[in-house]
Image (cartoon, rainbow, N blue to C red):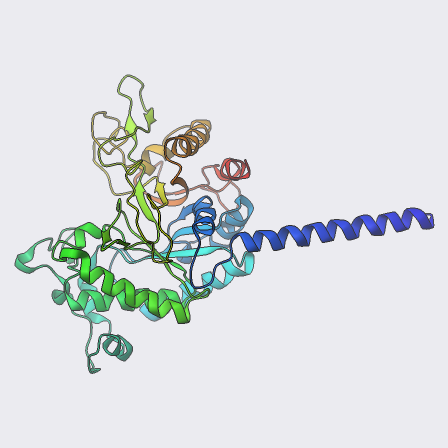
Length: 401
């Protein structure tokens, strides 16, 4: 190789490295926040949101992290959650923290979301209340466990709502707020920067003015301001919005897609403005927890899961897609139909409401299993993802566009 050719080769390599470093730096800036988040940064995260239910304890965790990085995901929804009896809480949160470390090693800008849902189980009676929970609420620490009964609505309202020993907690009860603060702080300490609070309106029926919700989220945010990775925790719930005295309770909103089946076209589903309680065009706005104001708060919509109707394949069941919950309907479609529908849904949401973003399906439970498969995975099918449904490259392409 001549001296001039060698020089050009070295210069070319240098320019490539410089360009790559500049791109990486600009991408990091695009997702930068500390203590507060601008609307622009928040929307960049929502525009790369994916539901990865239970990533923290996934049987194919390494493969899932590879998929998320390959696709370009930034907001990892429902990565950790408890829906069931709490077992060894210390082991659970150790694994949550371990997963967060692996995710942030792969991409420091990925934002992991945990969940504190609208279901409380009598197994909480076995979990000790840490001294710092008492102290947070101005109480003298004592040696006792959480009390399931102290979190319930009076007169057995919503008791055993989910199943025997599993009820809806009443946010007006101090014990409920103590439990929610406990779970949220543990997730923040484990490296999670978002918390989804599920069906907020189911839990607030004794909370006029949402005083207790603002109280507990205020405490969670105050803790995050000092202890979270970037001094902020993004809070959301399934709601069109909660506003009191001009202030929004949540940082962004979330809601099911509310797909609508087309009776004369078997297995086809569409999206439609004003279909039952859909959020399109209805997201409330005012002043956000980060300080900026809006007419409509940004939101994400997802292919939700909630159970089996036992009537799969039949039409005319509002909120169901051919009598399946949303993810079960989606997973039952042929691979190319799934890919086409994601493109359709992404485009439809962006065209009909610029405040909304489609949260891609990454991992979700199937209440109606498919050939014995109980979990939907977007991963490209491989030896590491033998049950992959092959939407990974489509999600990547949609986001790249």
